Amino acid sequence: MIVTRLPTREGAKTLSRAQISKGIGAAAMPINVLRPSQRGSNKNLIIVLVTFGALALIIVLTFLWFRLNAVRKESSDHSDRGDAYAKQRQYTEAEMEYRQAVLLANDNARAHAGLADIYLQMGRYSESAAECRVTFALVPNAPEVYDILGEDYAKQKRYPDAEQAFKQAIQQDPKQDAYHTHLGATYFKEKQYDAAIQEMQAALKINPNSEVVQKDLEAAERARDKQ
Image (cartoon, rainbow, N blue to C red):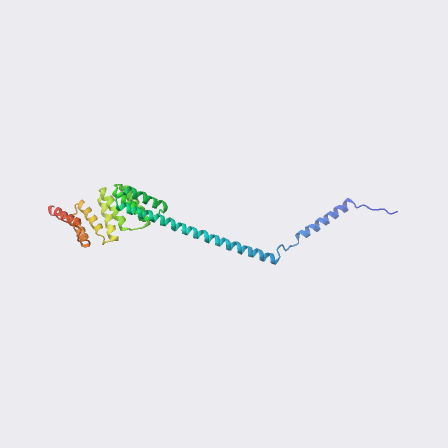
């Protein structure tokens, strides 16, 4: 009689451990995931993506460059219109144009200087001085802005400050007769008549045909003689 032996529990455990051990060994074996051809394909894909990314960046930067130029052109156009209104003494309209120019490009020094000038004409001296300071931050030592600032101070009877501002204007542009005239007028108000005469003579040397300065010079000479 043939007796069939059934596997014991211990045998089953032994078999299971062997199988597990075999599975673990198989999992631990190194597997070459990417073939050389696959690695080459991925490299080409990366090159394509980088190329498209660079092209996209160039397109964006080019668009921004053209847009910035367009905005600056629009700001400059508003400054031109502001200048035209200021020459016609239409200061409210000029202010609107300059303000729009600054809104588009806050570093538009010409618009800030224009605001400083029309605020001076409108008697808004503190606002004019503030715009002068903004302009100096953009264009240091601008002589015409020093002249505006000097006028602001003179209108407020801050004559020592006005004197210094006009001197700065002359230092930057000594051939501008108006700067000498304004400094001479400041000296006259401070009763420094000799200094006033000297500046008015300098102005007449640059512009001999100025009847206004000639009259101011004569007034300074009379005032000096009365001292």
